[in-house]
Length: 345
Image 1 (spheres, helix red, strand yellow):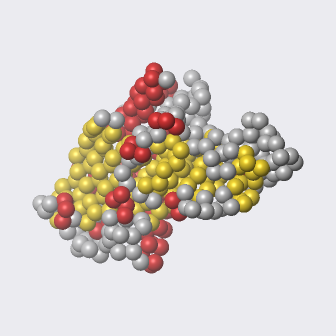
Image 2 (cartoon, helix red, strand yellow):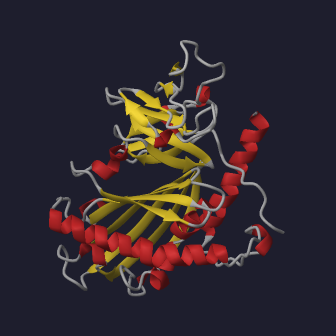
Image 3 (tube, one colour):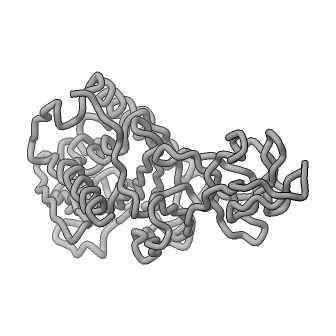
């Protein structure tokens, strides 16, 4: 069976971008198929509008800023940050229906979150916590990778880290230690955890320069998932038998926002093993992360999706290995949440 129209969870927070991306310049980003215009007003408040003039549908992002107004590049209608047309260069009368949808946006933990559902249900308390990215008092190393695959395929990849041993041989493959690991998936309300525990294994790569290579360590990979695809990964290792809090720990954000039914925005960020920011160290970390994501994850994820040749995921009857339970349960939970939302409408 071929794929149908996408069903998105609406009443939830999606990552629209890093806070640093929002400035006076006009930024266009498609989210859930919607063209969104993102910018920051002169007093620093983030704004999000549908990027489509209601007159002849030109993208407002191709227009100009005039203070806190955005002027359409086609016929010059000007809109404020709330989406109201406030100036018509051809008349003192404002055209009827000349409004642009204003989207609720909220900033937290260096992230601009957008609410794509009912505005009156937009509760900032529902935003996933990524404050640990700033635990060292410095901004994390971060980036954005476009993907030619639906967001669920990135979730499959991240909720099943066993792929590390095969996909990431050129970066941080774990020398086979994950094969001896213990894996568990558990649900807490509408949140999932997909965790790996690898006791008494040689010190993993993120500890090099801190621990001696070959030092026996207890190593873990703990992934937290919040719908629709906001994931926080804790990568840790401590000398074998020692408490976790004594170990070398880094945190990574992996947040996937649907662009369209077949493409996605993959936002990522990472703290540092040493906890100290440096230009040289951050350059090396950024290079390693972009290699892992852009040269290793991205090609296999996109190839796997393309190889379905238009067939829907479940209709292709995927085989299951057990270790892939995290991605499977995330897909099922998304379906459950979309169904729950539809029944409440």
